[in-house]
Image (spheres, rainbow, N blue to C red):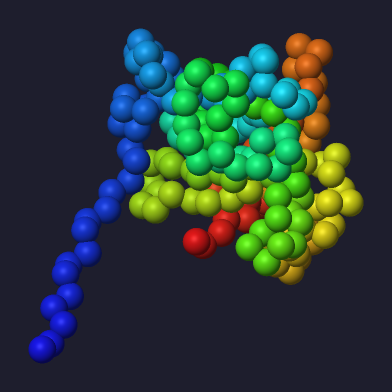
Length: 202
């Protein structure tokens, strides 16, 4: 019997509507009671509390003011928890978005993740997995955020070492800074052009 292939479902870009449905505060709308948003860690969560922040730039170097990001990470011990519960002190999944104002930054409050072993048992440097949605992008983009003060671990990371050009690896390294006297890491994403962020196919 011949195999009948089904037609591919049509895709479309995130457009301006992703904020209305998933980033209510960024769109200027009231949040829902059970909103998944940018506070992955509550104050009582164990580990080093950090702020992640950054801009998203298009191929012309202009700010993308309506980008939407999803973040996944391990906890401070390097353990993933597949359950999500807003009552927990830490959830390894969160969402954030760039804003429509002049600064147009995305932010996320979390704890610095620990070392995670890959499927082969090889340690990976502390990192945050990032998916980027934006108008003009038919299929969301996957990347990773590493930390510049984990140089020794980064040098041994099996994923970073898949990138042949050392200067391209730098596009995945967040730079430590301070915001209001608290530890933070800046991670700017460039979708195209000079300094384009490395994206992965999964």
